Length: 351
Image (cartoon, rainbow, N blue to C red):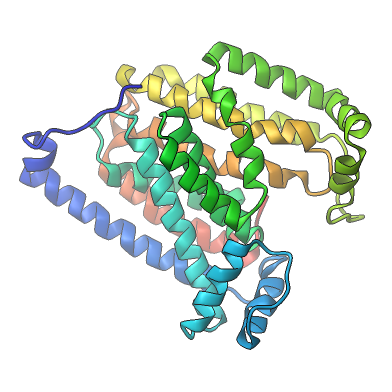
């Protein structure tokens, strides 16, 4: 599969103006990341439904490693942060900072499939801009923290699988699974990326129709009753409507159709890479179509919805509309998105 590299003599590496612009862009991204870490890390306990739970777990680590159902990777990560002497705010800040680090890895792996006409910091800037205005990302930051840490790594692992980088797929997949076991669902669907794009679309559409019709729920109930019971009893809540969620399915398809709609406005040399990323999005939606009818089933869509921000960021950076890909415009958008993130977190606005 074709990848792009920039030769040492490329103007992208040697032009002083480009180097200065990229240097300034890196400083802006670092400043924004520091601000975002402060916003999420300093949130009070009542912001985020699971914040108190994670705070209690972190506090319990002061007496050693407790018995817990949490994944071993997350447990040892939290224990290491505790041993460093961090308080609760430091713990929350570190977890969010690590999530941003996972995002940078995913953006880097996605970037290497695209032409070198846009520098990596520019794509990272656009990606953070769209993530910060996403309630799904806020949910991953203050509620589904473990899955939020794993989600960018799942996207990166599937990109590696698509690019036939098997070591990266195994390493990133194992790391993601150690943080949240649901990552295994998406990794198990990775072979679907070997299908031709049109075949994959047909598979995803059939899976969606089967889900909407309630067929997957009935099939799992008959073929694997224990799995059906586990899914239906997980975090049962009278305030949440379980069963087939057509609204979630429609919302998921909307983003894919939007991506198809903007594709003609993307530079021709970047369309293949964008289509490849879109295929990964479809694969990440398959677990929801299979078992997304229990309580809080939108958690199965969280990684896909987060990945969509990274994919649309690439579409923006390689847009045929010049202002949309201009570094100054993207930088201004990123600064503005910081205000949106602050409002979302302070008010607990999530999806």
